[in-house]
Image (cartoon, rainbow, N blue to C red; front, side):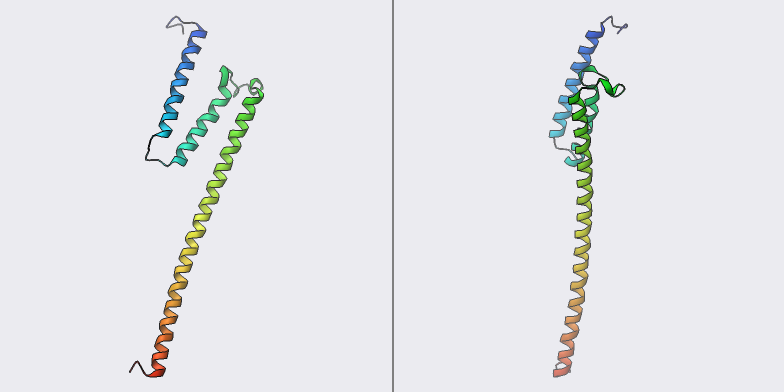
Length: 133
């Protein structure tokens, strides 16, 4: 501020403008096609939102949590809970995919065993009726 001869208020206004531009860029970026899955992008966006909460309204709620108002605290805790819920849901989906994969493999193996037994039964019937001679 001293280098440019501006007041604290002017610097804060400029920082606020820069933050608004950055949020617009982030929100536009999440809407564009990307080589990364939307699940990952959503988690990154939610993390950015949560990080922003303690510093809302130019109050350093991270260093001085007693300065955070009730809505900031509620927003922070809600975001934290949402992140934990999404992580648990992701873990459950991973387990479900693994279970489905295991079931498919088991069914294929059982199908192959049944096919082999059926072929053996066909051969046994052919032997009995004399068709294999």
